[in-house]
Image 1 (cartoon, helix red, strand yellow):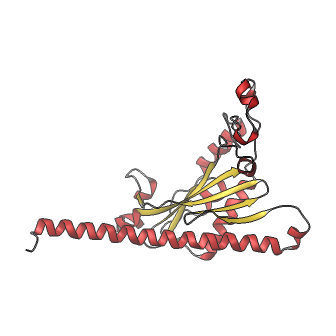
Image 2 (tube, rainbow, N blue to C red):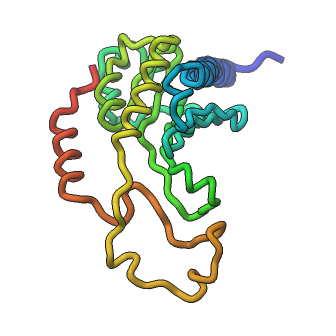
Image 3 (spheres, rainbow, N blue to C red):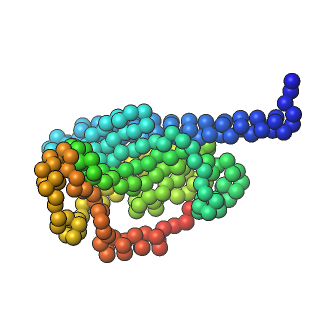
Length: 240
């Protein structure tokens, strides 16, 4: 028995939405594969260079699984994580105002690759309470167009959603920008009031399970940080 028109329309809508999300997922997965390849290539280039041979600085690639990859350098770690779900932007998001999206609303569905910055020592000493920071996230749609929400180098360079097409060159520029930002994102001394007290349990705990959290920006923001962020928001170009 053939379904009635209402049921038929429902089935077609299910198929169309699934096809769209599968296309976005595939593009995001392929983009993440490019990221892995570029990070591995950068690590090899560094290790083959004279600079590496004359220093004790690490620049290492580590595959953490199908949806995670790690880049370790100069005391920092960048972890790139692909989310396995597909998302749509909220109605009040800046992207939804673009002619590019209004021409085809399906373009607003995106996969996401998050970029987190951790301290290398947090993993080395298994400081499970240490913090990592989301420094950027990459959105990829069904057309393999992308844009980035992020800090400084990341957020200001890749915001032309209608024109930016993901490629090996784009991925390399993005990754090197993430490294550049991380190098300039320094560890600040935590507030005195936050670390002035220590329990007996904490002092008896080994470094492997230290409960005193460490992070690059922990518990406060310097005035310079606030001014920098205000300047970033004032100078941030609109999504074009």
